[in-house]
Image 1 (tube, rainbow, N blue to C red):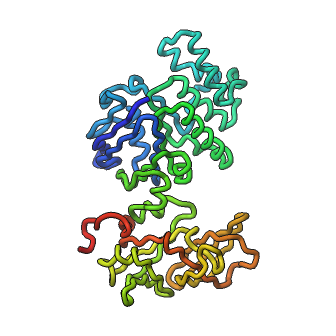
Image 2: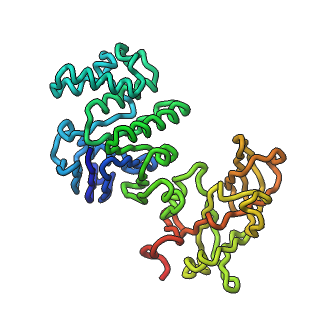
Image 3: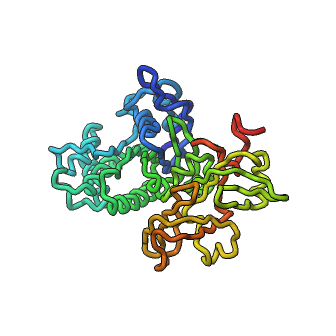
Length: 379
């Protein structure tokens, strides 16, 4: 077990492609941290640099008390689990799990003890004599994880290990990985493009875009307090709704004018956006931050978004409403299920003002309810 520290780590591919741009991150001992972001954001490149499979262009990587920039992958005392399992097809499950220990010349008795103990933990003790082709996808993934665990490394590295599994099995394996981490307490760096996977697994999540860290924090903090519009839109399923409009003064209050409705901000929110009154902004609200009239916690709220329902999607206890306003053609609200709703009818969505955000315009527009003005913002 060990702390993993990245300091100003940069990766540039020829001729001049910036894959990772000055990334600094302190991963605590025994922490489960998830790197998440869209394809091409640099998350897998970062993981491969930690593993030693990619040379870094600039910066340093430390595992425990040792800088490993020039240390070969086999000597970094880490174990990596790949998306495609990377099992030896001609070897049994037992030999796949034991292979790395044999290379390191561990005693045969210790190898056997480790392999069987880990196989029991993962529920694959009855599969040790089978070859990979005789296993299901979930079983192969367990073997790949087991092969990493038997080495007892300082850190585990996972590169989208669940992406080849079906939806039900992915959920089961997420729970299994979380349980294993609690039991083993090994520092873990996990890469995924699935933000739901990131939210359920990570002690902290690192949201990346274009080789840069956009936000790092606990899943709840990143979800509830996104630093910019990109993070707000990437984290959450269904994603956050964004409404373009303008902030207008009215007496001592501040209104967000969407065009078809006006939304009165809370007094504390109004104080935080005073410098933006009269300017174009983007209001963000998550689907679960809206409701139809009469639902308890929204009752009496005056801020109503009139819309036309396009699709009604039942989800059991809840339902997703896909709707449009005259200015915004894609609004999603997650509300309590009601039998009398159908596509084509009008609806009035109430906004929970405690859960709205106001952003600067642009994909990376900062959350105006958080922190100091960004460079180039209004002064």
